[in-house]
Length: 293
Image 1 (cartoon, rainbow, N blue to C red):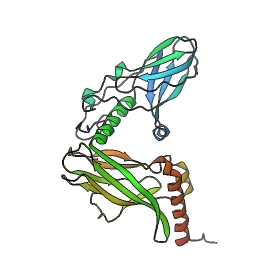
Image 2 (image 1 turned 180 degrees about the vertical axis):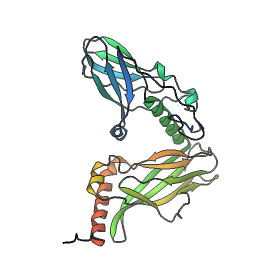
Image 3 (image 1 turned 90 degrees about the vertical axis):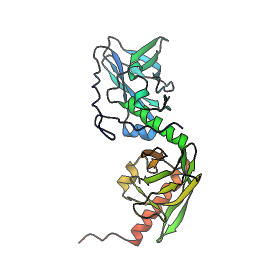
Image 4 (image 1 turned 30 degrees about the vertical axis):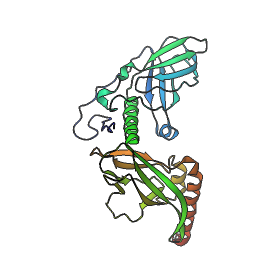
């Protein structure tokens, strides 16, 4: 089994002591690319390359592709780029091509990354990449960690459905853990709530692990309720990932790793409907005090 690798994404981050990473300087006077990723990109399953055109000419891109031994995107359509322009171009986020354990020590050299452009006249340009903010590095390390956990276990939601709790509808379902290549005991220590949804494992004592798979067991499960963390319109409207939950998992290597556990996206509308109905019922059960006249 490839063990999940504990990595540090920034100077002083992670566990223990990390040496400061060298500063990456983006040169001027030429055409270069810088990987970036905003919060909305995470929700959309994409990242972006910022093309900085300090070269002598403008051009029109018909297609572009991010190429690196650690992470290579699909080819997407481009856009016109004027002299002096900085333009952000989104790319679908691919699976990382993990080496050995997917750790930083064996990661391909990001200095070898390029963005390949196909221009509207059919010519090709190879643009050097400067991972100034360590975005490509972080995408690689995090996805390799995810892949290693996927190899070790299968953690997923099942049978999500509305139930009535204390006079209001909430979603309830099963969080199921199945052994794959993991050896020994596997523990789901916690699973975090989202902005608008609070998770409540049923029958689990406060401070106890959410789920534990014994060393000789192949499967374990726990019932979980999706209750209302926030009901205000601003939070509900602004959250881009209302049903994305991050578990802290120890998959048999002695360390905790963050691992995303999200329901089937086809259930999103139903889950939102139940959340809205629960919020409405809460307001009826516990109405806000009227403002003083």
